[in-house]
Amino acid sequence: MKPIDPQQALEAMWKLAPQYAQAKAHRMYLEEYRKTIKAQLMKACGLESIGAQEREAYADDAYEAHLEAIKTAVEDEETLRWRLIASQAAIDVWRSVEASNRNIDRATQ
Image (cartoon, rainbow, N blue to C red; front, side, top):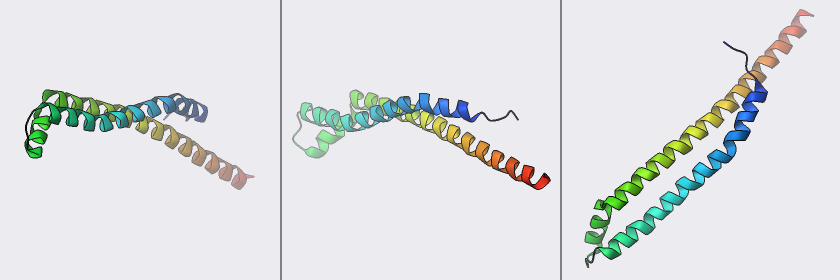
């Protein structure tokens, strides 16, 4: 097992943070824009019944394509989130190892 470099983990977090923020903002935008697409599709279908309008909107290729975009955005966001979590965990492990090393040093003096 290679030694943990806390500086490298911090640098990774620093680099990933803006990417994660952008990915999260993009995902949230897509989720909210989904409502706009649905409303536009319901309006455009020309049916009177709200239920029929909704059915047509959900069945539309544009709506399905938008759901795929949301899926990709969530995957991107989660990948970055877990990389940040892994970097934080590496720092926590390093901190624990360092504390253990200090305890061993004190015990052997």
